[in-house]
Image (cartoon, helix red, strand yellow):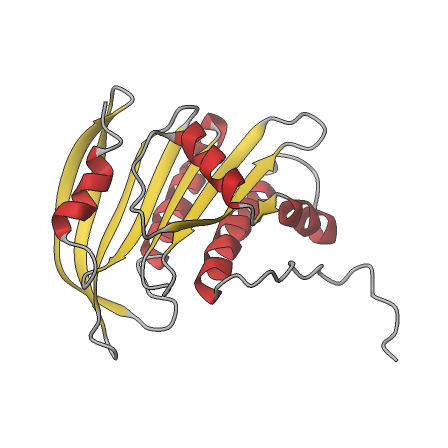
Length: 219
């Protein structure tokens, strides 16, 4: 018979039939939040307690993901991408929001869209900006293989009266040779700096449809 759980062991997230892609994306959001909190010293929760608190900010309720999306920006999500989960990380005891994420994915996991928004105080940190750029670079990869960029261009937009720049790339899986449209960019959300990370299966979506998602956020 298994012994009692060690209170210092990490608490495993609930398994409710989520896809592997969705769990990876949610782990990215939670991991990024924990790193920001511990490195910047926003509040003094460390180790097990910090990780446990971050885990509690996760929800796999699609309605919560759509709610957070509406709080970040008005956007037209492709119909084939269903809400999978969200992260809503707040300052303990005060309730001020530090960061929020909404995750959408297709049934076959070949396409996904992630929206994130951060407290303005976090974006004022140079270290945070460097981490955000690194996160965007890392999420330019598929879950199970590296992607090679075939072509890339910049699309400029105006969102919430602020200029925003998005990188649109066509990429190919090194082994599968599957092609994707990738979109990454930072913009002004309703309450603070925000980010869009999107990967669309090129067999199912055109470049114009990828650009259309950006255009749906424009003022």
